[in-house]
Amino acid sequence: MLAILALAWIGSVTAWGLIEARGESSAVLRAVFGLNGVFHPAAFFVLWRRLLPMRVVDMACLLFAAGLCAACMALRLYVPALGAKIDIQPLYLWIPVIYVFAFTLTGHRSSLRLSLAILALFVAISLPYLLQRPVAPHANFTFQLHMVSAILVAALYFFSSYQHRLQAAQLTVDELARLANTDALTGLANRRRVGEEVAAELVRARRYGHAFSVILIDIDHFKRINDRHGHGVGDAVLVDLAARAKEVLRDVDMLGRWGGEEFIAVLPETGFAQTLDKARALCAHIAARPLAGDHAVSVSCGVATAQTSDSSGSLVQRADEALYAAKRQGRNRAEGA
Figure 1: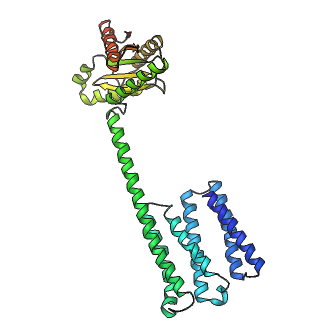
Figure 2: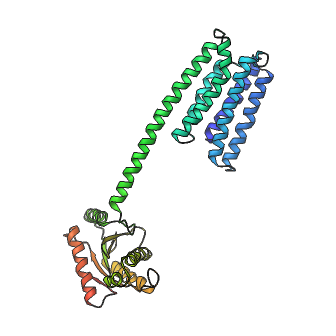
Figure 3: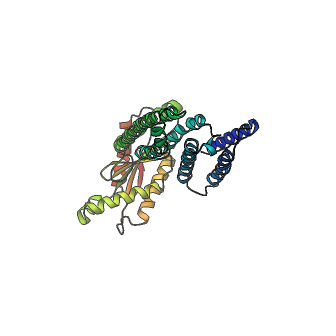
């Protein structure tokens, strides 16, 4: 928008200079170019300094252009003494640009209403002229302007509607993709998405020789929470635990819900010792404060680091075996396999 305002100002000043040099100016033209010379820099400054929202500046520019063109049309058609120096053909060439600009400002339906209102304004101004003097010098050109403008508005609405539908379809696709990869309760990656990430990390590990590990996390005695307090509290514990676990993990780590009360963390480029330390820190962090209000919760963790011979299933299976070892050794702890 800043570039458009700058180009509009440069074009207006250049045209004014050329008209003055040819001696074709008038008081009305000087007023028109003077308004452009003031409005465009002012709008540029307001937008550049962000003194007003861009939407407000855009609408002000549209209304200014439409109002100025409408005034020039009225003067040229009805007040020859003042508008004789206004060249109507260049004026009419600029009017379709107003409709194009209108369709960049708002939604396609709002843009249609706005464009039709501007078209109605120009038609209303010229209609008495066309009815009274159908063979006047500018009648045919004015009529053709309105026809071209109507066709242009219809075409712009068609393309705008198509773009709107395309964007809506893309949003639907994106939302379906998100739902397909996200656990509805916790907002974490679901089992399917975590499985894809583990498979991708295995490929990268084989190709580049980078270590990566997984932590399988299970809430200790989660069934007691559900039995004593109900599944609503159990769900709240799962949500809080997901948020608490993220506080320990890095941004590059993926935390997902594996199923039920089990979670899994995928740690790229992380060896066994580092991952085991991270899992122990995770156990301590979760046990440090109650979850979902006043429910003391602990977790057990199983750690496994990818080996050359691992598949996604074998890697998670080894983490699962380590998890059950942690359960057998007293819970609220991390073990590795």
